[in-house]
Image (cartoon, rainbow, N blue to C red; front, side):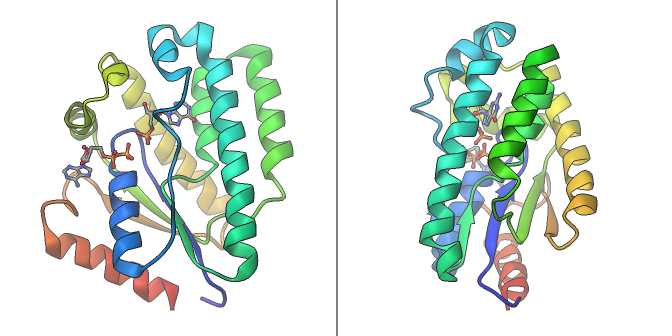
Length: 207
Ligand SMILES: Nc1ncnc2c1ncn2[C@@H]1O[C@H](COP(=O)(O)OP(=O)(O)O)[C@@H](O)[C@H]1O
Ligand SMILES: Nc1nc2c(ncn2[C@H]2C[C@H](O)[C@@H](COP(=O)(O)O)O2)c(=O)[nH]1
């Protein structure tokens, strides 16, 4: 790779993004950028009533990620330093297209493009795919109260949205390397060999 890479770990809710990004940052001595979740004032309201709260929630995520991405660009990317994050800002569009309707969706889409089109995109995406049972088990294991009532149908839609989004990114951002990890089989938490394989693959890509 010609320059220090910007790496993003992606996948649906509970796939293991934060866990893998944190482990890789430790192994490869990289700074890690993590999503702001606990301080989000709209998430629990959103899970109780998606139609009422989706616009506020999506805008909150978008503004937070925009600020984090700006800081990441200034602190690392513009200085030629590699960095790993537990999300790609494109996930705003994945969620926004799913949760918003009508004019709010159109306005949100426009704001997303105005804010992000000229910002650097990750060079490498580690995409963790996992099926519904795996995600439900990991969300339960994580034990966040506001996620207890996530509808399986919503999660299943997100699984499909993520697959479609990664296929679309492969076409629209051909220079981005997308590595798909089978999150049902590859257990980078319990199985050291599985983690070593993922870390070695990333090290090779970074050369
Ligand atoms: N490969 C894995 N095997 C078993 N548990 C995992 C695995 N990856 C993540 N977990 C656990 O699943 C939960 C969700 O992981 P997390 O990294 O928070 O997911 P995400 O950031 O994608 O939402 C956490 O409790 C984490 O410890
Ligand atoms: N509607 C949206 N929800 C989002 C978005 N980003 C994250 N989330 C939710 C999903 C989880 O409940 C929680 C943490 O996300 P993880 O994927 O890290 O588990 O926040 C979003 O853009 N829109």
